[in-house]
Length: 78
Image 1: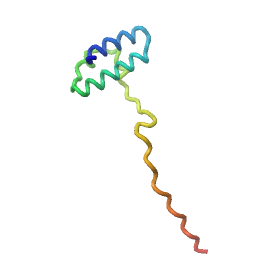
Image 2: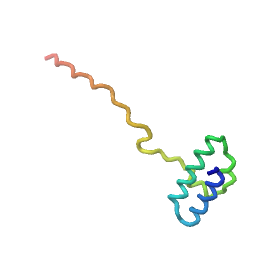
Image 3: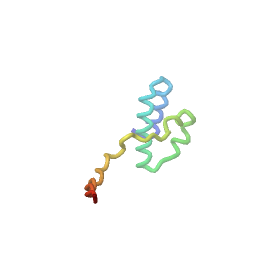
Image 4: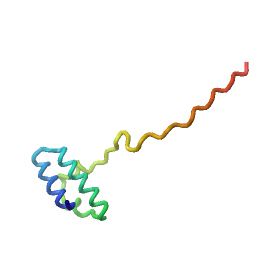
């Protein structure tokens, strides 16, 4: 699916009130546009797309790194 086709489908989903489908299609369009180096389809899409282009950070974007090994407790000098 082309970037523009995904955006047309996303706009239709948005108008129908299906925000989950719209967000999924916009995400697909963004990924494809990134591969192709495209920006213009998003500027030409209009204001409806802005809420779908907000950046959200997933809680666990990358698997958590293993922590440093715990330091051994120092023996008390009593």
